[in-house]
Amino acid sequence: MEDEDGLLAERRTLLDEIRSDVQNLSASMEPAGPVTDTLRSGVAAIADKLDALSDLMR
Image (cartoon, rainbow, N blue to C red; front, side, top):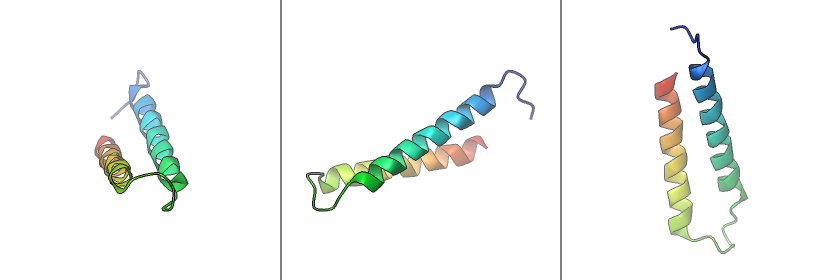
């Protein structure tokens, strides 16, 4: 599939940036910090969904 208008490359870049941001957020959460287990699992779920979406768009 060709990417004549650059949209595929832009989507891929955006998804990669989102994945990186979520991974950085996840890595910055400390178990002893004020972050609740609910928030932690929510972030993990978002990361998993973004990763799956990224795989589907390739």
